[in-house]
Image (tube, rainbow, N blue to C red):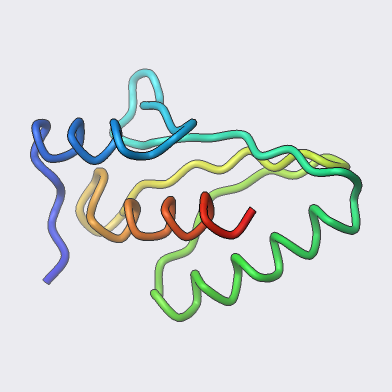
Length: 95
């Protein structure tokens, strides 16, 4: 069963996630990804959608042209879980 990470576990995981930071006022993490152009951006988003579906864990994201702002939080546990960390790592390693 998925559970919310403790503050210590969340902070330890966040240190290892390059570019990710806590969302102020919310138990979530966020990162902005920037790409060469819209085609590269949309290709990455499509690949991430497939990974998210495999994990059954879907990001909140906002896209304009070559930028994607991603926010991750596990709604079922009202905070950051190991699924958020896994998906953040996949996103970092697939850019």
